[in-house]
Image 1 (cartoon, rainbow, N blue to C red):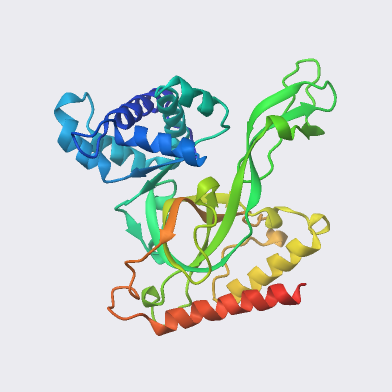
Image 2: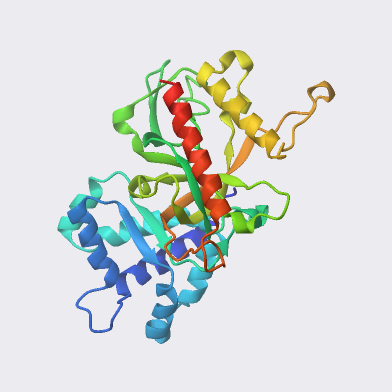
Length: 349
């Protein structure tokens, strides 16, 4: 996605910092609400600031006349361009944390990365309602967890060393796959391959993939349930388990389908097995996707849709959809898939 305009990004940062510095849940509170939360973050060694989406409206009612911006406009811009503005929101959070006190500023400088998490978002969608128009927007989806991966480290920002001239190249952002520098910046080198990752100078975070399936009462007659991979990071990992009905706040993203981009000889045996299993599942569900014919010189699609979540929790308000009684078919379908996953792991040793 194209980068947001620098002037607009700087304006959003300034307004967002002002919101964090001034918002109080109650007018007679001793200090702003998010200052208190940052102190709790430091005490609990957490790096995610959780923001109630409804606070923008409350802030507009309480302080709207004393501000040079409308908090509701800020909320709407964040919701519409969330994925583009996410780096600006993180920069604003860093600025806000450092400004609280010298002691907290010292703690913040020792932390590699902070993140912003929104909850109580209004734009709720089912998996079947998601369209490409929602790409990059802040939305909330609901579904049932069918399986979760183990928590693994993810490289966010890499620092590399050129194998030819040993020059250090920092701030190489990873685009959902291992990304090396395009070229060595040394004008006398211009090397394009053989870069060495320097882990101690790079930024890592926890990463987990959650497979979420739509609720049974949302499935039209004669159709198979749709699923999506939900990606969570940092403090949001290990919050749900298979069988949970959840709601996830985040944005729909387009990520590289790495196995599809590899040549057959480059693909590991385990990756081949996973790709074959996924292809068989999609074929049985009647969801073949779109692929080109190599004989006609058309390349196959090498990207897929996932959901990058900033907040995940069990949906305690969900009672089998809009019905007052739980949907037995939905629970049975999810339970069968969970049991199959456990059996497959047991057979694999």
